[in-house]
Image (cartoon, rainbow, N blue to C red; front, side, top):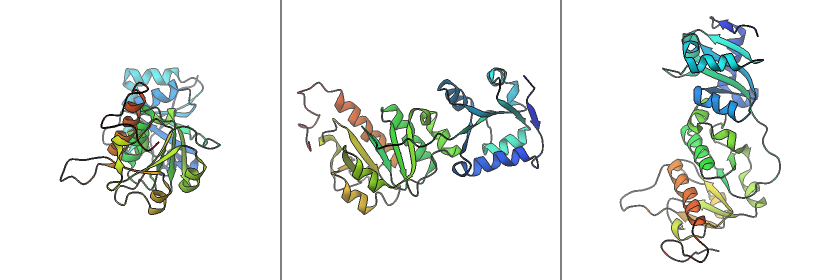
Length: 272
């Protein structure tokens, strides 16, 4: 096994190729995974790595050194610390990263529970929603136009490995996906909907989640079978979109753990 290649110049063609991947993952069909947790999770899930990278100082970390040693047959690259920081975009990166091929979007209609994101623009929110969906056992996440790229570095960091447990589709016609699903569709709205805690969430459910400021488009909200609102304390307007999604998904988890014949807290099951 040959030694890792060392890159010390910003003019290096391989460095420029890495920058292009970080700047526009979808265009190049590849993604940059930054950090020990993401890289090890990727390896544990059997996702193939095209390139394993470490900073000069990072390779002295025992865990990173072990990753480099174990990566037989993988193109291994050492970047000067300043170059690694530049491409990572973090002030204090852990010093290891990987380049992977973005998995192809799954074919066919969504089945079971799903989360549909309508123009959710903040990368942190998108990544957190992906992480929450995976934790709640939801496999399908569909991103419509205007969403932050699912495979961008910031979304990957916020997702903390959730990407490898999900079937992710991007640039989806959400109205068409909604029409094709037999699941109960629920539009999450800040006000005017039925209380989340009075809706039967026995499933399967397609959750519609909207933009941070504008919420769901009127067309999608109107197409949903149910409009749901999370009751909040007086004087508050709304929750962050990622927090609201977590409340909704785990209310469904809670309800599904209730023995048959029991009632949902706050009253009997409704909207069957």
